[in-house]
Image 1 (cartoon, rainbow over the protein chains, first blue to last red):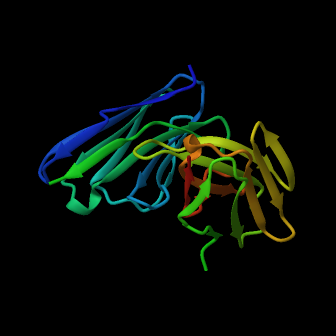
Image 2 (cartoon, chains in turn cyan, brown):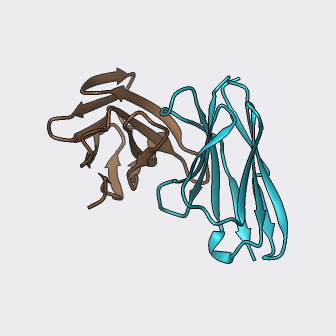
Length: 111
Length: 110
């Protein structure tokens, strides 16, 4: 299995909703990442988990809350988002700190 | 000055052309150099990665790194319409932070 699976593929949520994005990989990768990508822009790093521990938080607002329940799963909990948070949210994993395998992303729209 | 500079294009070429995509960077600590391809509404896909300077070839794709000039390139031979995508260069000093270029949009016309 050489894939990173993200669910859901599309999500529309109101500003008062709570939702979660899920990411799963079974490649034995020990680093997992959340990236945010706006249209026609490169991916921006949000969080890095290494060996299930949060190792990097790129000063992301607290309305985004990551969780790594085990070495194969990564969640991103969303609460009280703003319309400007609408974007493609990408999960990635890697064996080392480079050469990522990305998922197809969750396209999030905040209304 | 951005750490990684990449011309966003768009770059339009006829089918069969040789495509040259380039990035420059300013951080001499970068050791790992990657190229990703991203189709519309999909996640990026790792095409090639190179450690330090030199060339690497994989089928129609060749990646070159010149650390002395802080310049990396990706060449695509015999370009196909299916190569139409955004190509992102990316670099890492070996930690968990990878810096992406802006991406170059490539269109290959049949």
